[in-house]
Length: 152
Image (cartoon, rainbow, N blue to C red; front, side):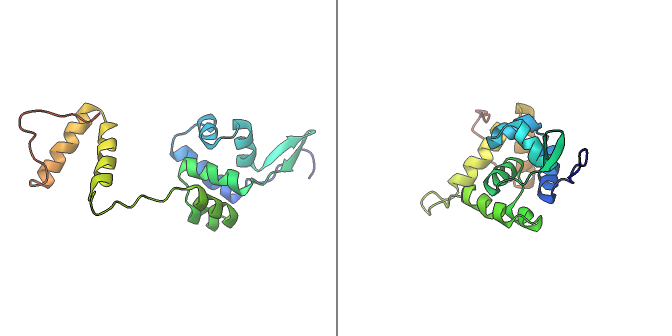
């Protein structure tokens, strides 16, 4: 490769970069979450690293690319379509399977998940969610008996 000539970013890198931007994550934060340096993230993202004034192509190891994809929400199917079946397989290995709730616990896991999401909202947004639920499902939302309970 001649000096000053840079390779095009690989398809998987463009996919991950678009997802990172969509998630409104900085490169530094995304790299931190993936457990790599931001300099390494940039190398993988650009598809090259600078060595002695020239651009040397970089191909991310499958495990590293899988961690990057996991951080920004890129699926294994998307990685495979981008030509990185190896990274898609690595992503499947590191992605936890959803926990199946037992018959005894019923809806506990989904309810806990919804409650956690609700708890992350500002109080005004929590109240709006409850109002909408009550309006759309009158039998599903019951008054709390005079006591207001806020998530979180």
